Image 1 (cartoon, chains in turn cyan, purple):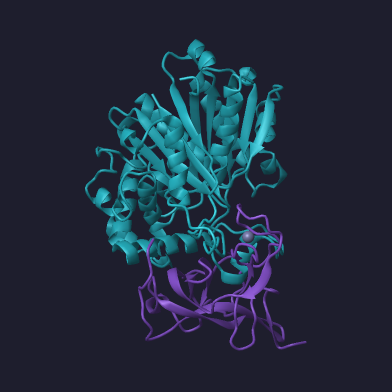
Image 2 (cartoon, chains in turn blue, cyan; image 1 turned 180 degrees about the horizontal axis):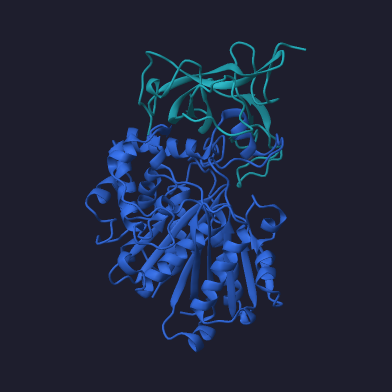
Length: 395
Length: 152
Ligand SMILES: [Zn+2]
């Protein structure tokens, strides 16, 4: 297909809490992706960075920070910020330049160093910044929103803490042998349910940690790819859609939704619309998926995503989970990498890391966590303030 | 200097009975909270005016949770040691909008369920020297009907 771009190389720095500058993690991932692609840095004609807002100016200009760290090579440069969706925005910038015929070989890098504890706004008083105001006026942290979504599953669908705990058990098992994962340990459901409540009904082990980490991909035009690889994994679609008015589900970090008083809410909620746009662009549907990497900021949120990407109807994700459909060995494993449950959150790297995992899976190179016969994979997440993020890859 | 003032200007009234203040488009009827926009958020409406109006004082719980750990700054804890509090997102029928707020003092997640009726109150958020800063909160209405009109 003309609209494909190739994923020639992928790479990561192992995720953890190392406390070192983000640049080093990014360089490590970039070098790994370049080596994986068999492409020298000097041949890269476009470099895109996922911005980090917690690491000073170097983070605001992450693209050029990486280019400089790798040694200026004259490549064109861009930096993308879309909160948790920054990585896919960066991938989309590279993909569209390649599809426009303006670039042949692009490097996309995201790296972050995160503070301990809750992600909080940067210091200072900002009475017109909604993200600052939700902390100041309400004390609404990120887990507050995860708690709201989880509670709706309980009150509307009859889900319970044991269901949420099972997601953690599954993902911990998936990540056991992932060399890039931060947590590689089996977790029992009892451990989850005995951990302290953070945001009712969610407990500490239901909620992902914040991590240092990085991920990088080398993207190529299909022409360039054919010279370098016999059968590369292809990106079939990237969805970076925004919501449609009125967005009636309370999205992090908003204090209120849109009003549906004059215009009825769209039939499809924002999260589902992110995947729908990608399916449409790829000419594929949920039935085509071999696996999915979804944004499990919390255990319960993974269940929401399973429904939003069309694996089942609303309210049925717990059933899918308990039947083993979303476990390795099941029909469509969800988060075979171990997900955020095993990695933690490193904002600008997240969406790129998801693409790395799907690429390894489609190459058949995922080792003990390999999804047998994987042919099509989907990644999905959502960034603060209306950033959709979904990538569909195929062999 | 008044002894108690809203923590933020223009978002809610404090006289009994208190109300949140929203924007309302005179052309299409779309509401907005907080009332910060001077144009209509409905993409199908060209209006560049929003009237400030009091919003419904009662609504139904869209969802709820609590904060068992002290949120980071700029949150200011009114007590030392920290005391957990509940948070609710509440759906207003007429305005067709969901608004987040803390749950009134003395109520926790055990007093709530999706669809439960709540009303708006104004309570102290924190004490800043001699002055009390007020914030809007949602208080469960006991004994009223529940679960009606709630769908995803
Ligand atoms: Zn209007």
